[in-house]
Structure formats: C-alpha cells, structure tokens
Image (cartoon, rainbow, N blue to C red; front, side, top):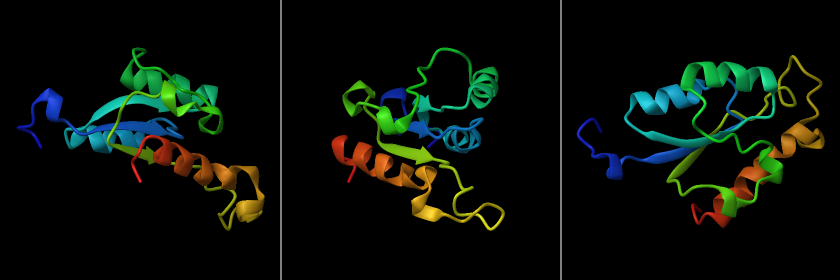
Length: 114
C-alpha cells in the first residue's frame, strides 16, 4: 500500500476510538482516517494529543446521523468489552454498552458497507 496515491488510499472512520490504537495500526498500513467517534473526554484528549485537532469527533455512535459522516471504505471499532469480560458483570447484550454493535451495523447499512 505504500505506492498508493492519496486518492486511492483506503479510508476509515475510527468508532469507539479510545486513544487510537486501532487507527495507528491502519495508518501504519497506509490507510487514511476520516474522523473518529469517542465519548470519553479523557480518551479524546489523549487521542487528539496523538493525532491532532483537525478531525471531527462524531461523538456517541448511537446518536450519529450517517449522513453527517464522510465517505469511508471501512470502519474500526474498539467497542467496550467490560460488558462481556470476566472481569466485569458479564451482562452482555443486556448491558447498554453491549448494544453498540447494533449502532455499528446501522451505520454500515446506511453507508452501504454491508
């Protein structure tokens, strides 16, 4: 992917971005981030320290209007694992955080990615 022109780069949006570990991996492969979604203010602060202030934080992915998102080829999401983890209460899909997968599916459908 190193030889791809800017217009041919794979573009992605970083949902449940945390501090951007997933983004870092994709950018190291030559992909281009088009924005991110993160609700934790401390994570966003660190994310912006790493990647700058230029991109829009689309906020809570469960409230995003897909029409407000830029075009992208794929999405990544580090959605909260606490609801599924043996360290947590393991409420799974009964926990509000476990429902985030449905928000991601909705965005993918509306952006014609699936």
